[in-house]
Image 1: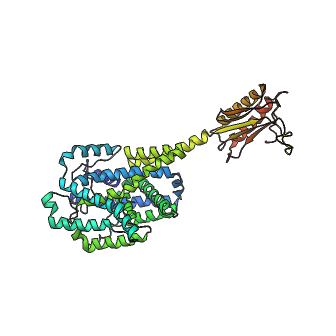
Image 2 (image 1 turned 45 degrees about the vertical axis):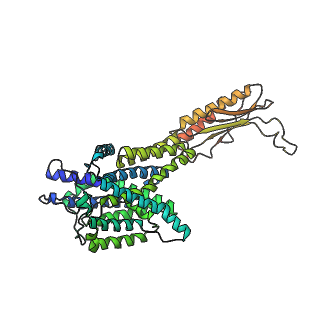
Image 3 (image 1 turned 120 degrees about the horizontal axis):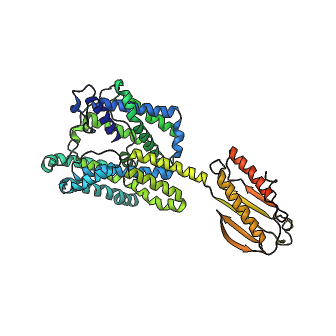
Length: 501
């Protein structure tokens, strides 16, 4: 869709005025009289995307992929799956819906689909429902039953069976003529001739292709990580960048659209039982056979069947919504990242949703760095706990302050304020008649336990185990804390911070 919009913009700049969105067709007779054709723009756009991607690989920008956390990837891919599903509904219903693009276009598309419900092609809808039921029943019930009863290890190719049978029935019953069912149509035989990019429009295509290149990388890496986690193999981000960039550069020398990871086709491949890249060899051989010889036999294949295959394959993508409850129980912040990624991608658009998702994830990192948790613990030791505990009577009274995060200029003030609150609370506790054992987190006392005796405190300990690193302002803050502690000391209350500093 993004490539079609970019193609439309570049084409409009050369023919003047706004033109209709270019669709993914094999021939573009609409532009034969112009110096630059849509297929030439698509070829150059693919090459431009490859340039951006190879630059990312050469500059080793794969480290940016570390910000693609599992909740972000899961929310983003689920939101993208919603767009893929909505894009199939018109074919499932057999209605014609005008193309839409831009921020929030999904609402426009859903509205267009809703007002065309009375125009639904009943034959197309029946074929779609039968196809979906066949695929779902086969994968969810028949295959598990056969695997359990007869120990069937070879996956049954339900998609291939469905395509072959519906293509044959479509040709025999002539669904296209008799029932107005949309079909695939003519598939030109033979491989396309190599065609170099049109370098005169490369500059325009470079501008239009930045966002597309980013989305392609994001979707590709996200799917690779998701499937790598599912099948327990390692994903090398650098290798993936080089692979996708070289594919785009090579594709730019042929009349093809930009190369990307197709969510629907990928999940169809996974649902078919594929686990390694060897499956692509068989896919390519079959695709080559279709291009060279079998294309005419698929002419009568209903388009709603292809949409049904993609729809069923997306089921596993939407099953990820079940992880939200578990994510919420583990981390509220990761839950927010998932929700923001999903909602932004679904309600706005894929490109804008990705940008918002990454920005929000980075914002949570900043928040956790700027407002880390802190806690303190202090107690008074009156006497030996048992006869063998000789150190108990000798141990000085201490207050331990813990700051759970790196100490930086962004959280120095929080560190000083929390340390002051700790010191004030500690001093106040020793002014009371009875000392207490107090455990406090983020300024809230937790279940104080009474003890007798009043001994003067001697040590303030700052636990720095959680401070991964400190900057210049952090060092100054630590020194200021030592000076402040000494200034607050009195004959009745002495803080010795020298041991730490």
